[in-house]
Length: 121
Image 1 (cartoon, rainbow, N blue to C red):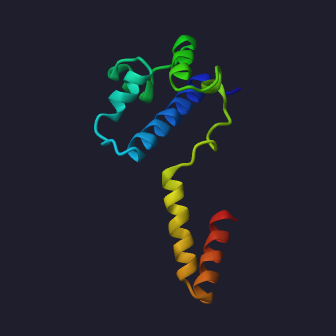
Image 2 (image 1 turned 60 degrees about the vertical axis):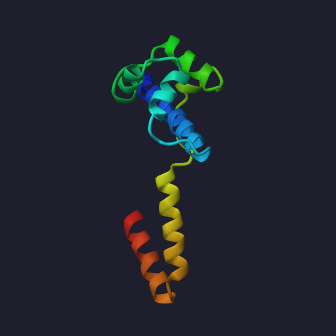
């Protein structure tokens, strides 16, 4: 049975990350973006901080967050959203792996392939 509290927090953090990425891409400074997100979803910065760490998101607050983030009702309750928003760290890793692969000679590529098989095997 899925844990709704964990699911809602994880998905709220996905919305938060999306907000941060869009704001930074628009040229806004990173400082103060947590407060800006709290304002967007109409909660205090303190409450947003609590939500990020441990405070459960009830039904009313979940619908409020969804409305202000312009996602469909029930979005925060879905478990299958992790793949919907790319993880910047994962993207950097993939770019670094691609660069290492392309820069390697045949022996280096075999070693990289062996390492991946060992890690996934």
